[in-house]
Image (cartoon, rainbow, N blue to C red; front, side, top):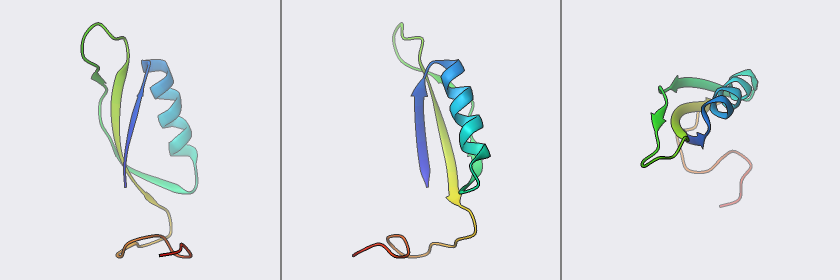
Length: 66
């Protein structure tokens, strides 16, 4: 799955740290921060992750309703 985080650099660092410590997620790739447009102090980070212990080949999650 792909995740985009937007926030101040310190917030992004804390969020990535929290997500990487979550046993439910395996973070495959985390990009370097991209500055937002204009004079914003906010940045964007893109994360590629997968749920740990599961292989998802089809649509939806196991146990979810169609």
